[in-house]
Image (cartoon, rainbow, N blue to C red):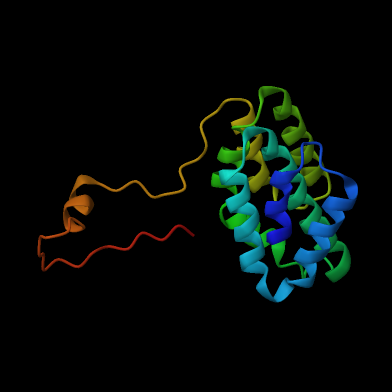
Length: 164
């Protein structure tokens, strides 16, 4: 992920050579794919607005290379990126307004090439159109909130809400 953060030293657009270097480093570190994905997500979250789209291009490049090299079924990057994809795209859309069309272009390519399932991509396209993102955290009722209030002891068992 050091290669990724060196992106901050360059002015966009990022060169093809730089992108290739980052992608190669990510693929080489496949054993640590969770760290690689987290590094990209953190970069997108913390970088300046003009680096949001280059961050997306890095994500796209890693996923495409992984699918190409290991095959669609053995790619570990796309499934891992999909875990926090709503949050990642909330950060991506904080890019300059001129860059939003570039994000949509990548999403359309992902849809066309089945990089992610439609039910993952559609909410991201909706966000581009200004619709609110789907809720990624379950909505708690006031009773559940009371059960989880620190400092109070309850004999009731806490209900766990599964997201999947």
